[in-house]
Picture: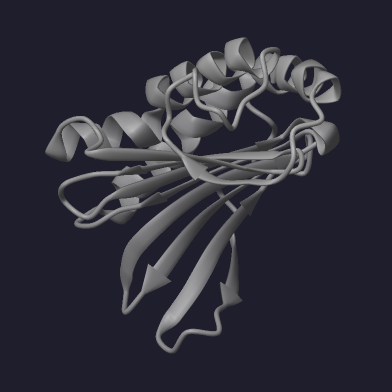
Length: 177
């Protein structure tokens, strides 16, 4: 949450307009001066997280990265050689953070372990109070798809597994304080 707080301060100093995708360097024209440091912290925290490490562990470092900014929303998108993808989004103004990892060939046990690790990475050793033993199952608009949702009691945090045809295809950790 420290990264979210530093991004709040940086965004309040910025009046940059909505921009399209740009490269992921901290010197990108999409970022005003005060955002450079916050952005570097956002990138470092994302790359240190369990979702990035899992995807990079299967295919090496990300092959491409893109940054976009829409008002207070800042989004990083990493793509990997094996079809993996990590989208990390923050909106400091409303203290929203989300990471969505598109995965392949992952077991249910590994998916749950990654979500738990992501919770601890984002919120510290005590996490955000997600109840891992009592998930809810939600339907999805896509045929053969559903979502398994684990809800927490701090900052409306939740972990999600997107399942299609019985296989986990994506993991999501999100919160909004």
